[in-house]
Length: 362
Figure 1 (cartoon, rainbow, N blue to C red):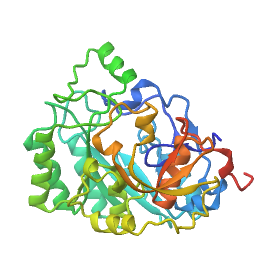
Figure 2: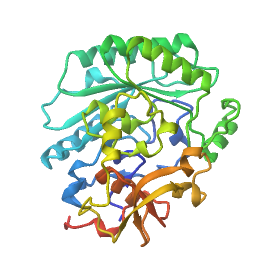
Figure 3: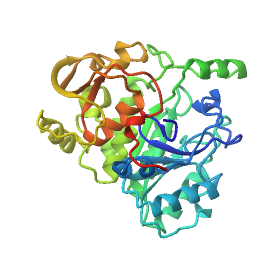
Figure 4: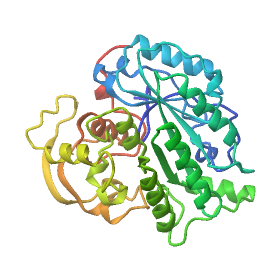
């Protein structure tokens, strides 16, 4: 079913554009979303999808560079009475965005590199102007995206503290990560003569690593300022929107994602500890069983899809939804979002959902 595009953390609605702000490190410069145009409202597929997290115009082409299309999607989601978080990640000019009275749980995540840089399409001034504008309109929710952190470029303590001090000033949470470099993108960098360096001991790939030293700097300085920080987008969104758990179920891999000391730790731990085989999973259109595993291996690792695995990926413990029929990674993600369980299945890598989810005629 190609009506929806399911990414790791969102249902992505919107259109891939030919131009954007010109950030040379952008992971979409590999052309992976070329021609994408998804505008089906999730509840037109299944009413239970009203709770799914949505990202608007997260493909190539900033959401505020295509403001008309962004507003059209919001109007249609509003008409459908969508209830899940709706996220707009942007470096565009928020001051020009009309502040309409949508009855939606809208979240603007203002992205920053932390400094002005020759290969960076956004500017510090625009970032700060967006934050000032956010103070004048409190109906939406807001956060800061400090991404990507690149070795030797924007990972110094001065830049880190600028981001954290700004977050403290505006009372916002910060999401952060390293640079993602899939093979196609690394080839593009090489062709362009860009010398991005991975941190020692790591290789570019699916996961977005930073060094232990930079990680410690961020952790220590955020704690000193009492700024909530998150390595995973879904954890930040779940926190800001007051959800009862991380909707992406990262609590199955607590060491890898830094659950210890996280402001969501108590909520996620309580939810995880209360999972049981008695849960009625009426939202899943597949035959399943609930099995307890003490050393479950992530299927992405087992199938060789992900090469950037950690020890946590082979030590997943807890109740797992076991599905024997063929499903997709998109199915797995939606099941996690809706139920809070992780999934063990013989899936194929795909951003498309199985047709079994479709219960309404569009």
